[in-house]
Length: 132
Image (cartoon, rainbow, N blue to C red; front, side, top):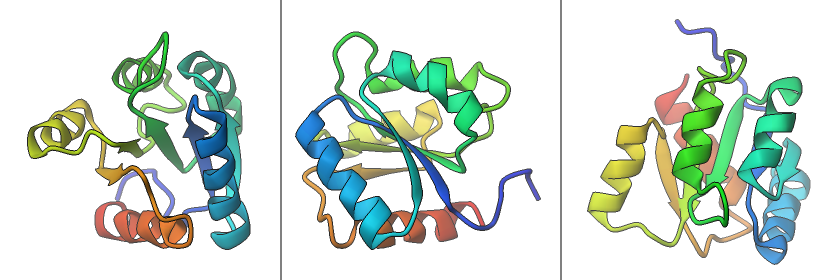
């Protein structure tokens, strides 16, 4: 058994698009009941992630500056976050793209646009399948 918790509560969410972030925040906090820390950039996630100590990182792929893959790489170099599971959220979900994200270390990929009413359940399903 790894040091990951069986119960998913705290999610670090990284998304540069403010409107998408607002919808996901509502879906994850109000509908899903998660404790959320939202970041508008990879740099912000690197600053705030270790102190927040998330159970899971939800990461956008296409962001200006630091994209999702380079953010993931940097997060994995922080000891407090190195073992934290990551799910990418992206519109780029061709099978070769999904394989690439998983090769980088993501446990799964959620396609955009996502359904706000089922996002929390989708994340819990991935968590149950891959982490518990």
